[in-house]
Length: 310
Image (cartoon, rainbow, N blue to C red; front, side, top):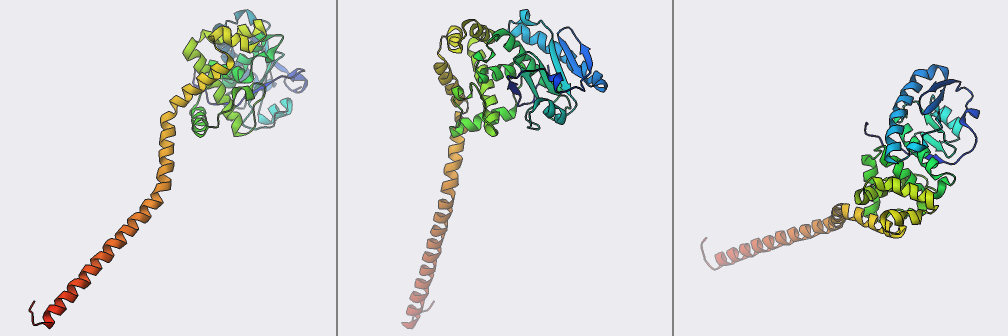
């Protein structure tokens, strides 16, 4: 499947059905696993999104060991543009929130394609719905950073901007403690960093314990009701130890960049001093040359006064 752009997607616990807020979504497209609601003149778009969503749910349910959670079909509400999406969902962050998944099991998308293709957004939100179904009746037992990290990992939603954010925060010592983003993400630039950290932590999990560790972690959380216990069952580590090892891994990865940054800072501080020293040294050389010239002129004049010839 195509590489995904980095998206900031909302994971929201909400009540009530989206069609109650979007009465214009009167057309319906049915597939094996989805019921897609849209405006009548968006049926072709809905069919394309539904087709890609069928791919996503097949792939993601297999990797999450969630094939027994495919029924009932997932309601999906697609909106013509960001404005309609905002009116229906109450999300007033244009270009930032492009889709959301409800703990009640439905998905809402901005289908305009202005900021990102809706087919790409759908995969992220479908992951959330499947995780919600596994975790039911306690969908918040999985920390938000893990939920979002899994969604980004499953849809290969890892961009250069994510890497840059993570590198800059690591070098500057500004990483967010995972515990602080377990229930809510901060606003602004820190929100993007929270998503990047979640994806990075899950990638670390799979690198060390294999991709199957994701399904094991989610199902163990659902079974025990405790993410801490699930983490120990999956990795043998406490959540604190896991975070420490993950942080050590990315600090090592960006260690060279940190050294280069320190070198640039030292160079920036030292350069003005080096320029001043070079200038002073040049002045001393000129002054000495002038003194030698004057001394030579005096000796020559004195020699002539005593009858010498040049």
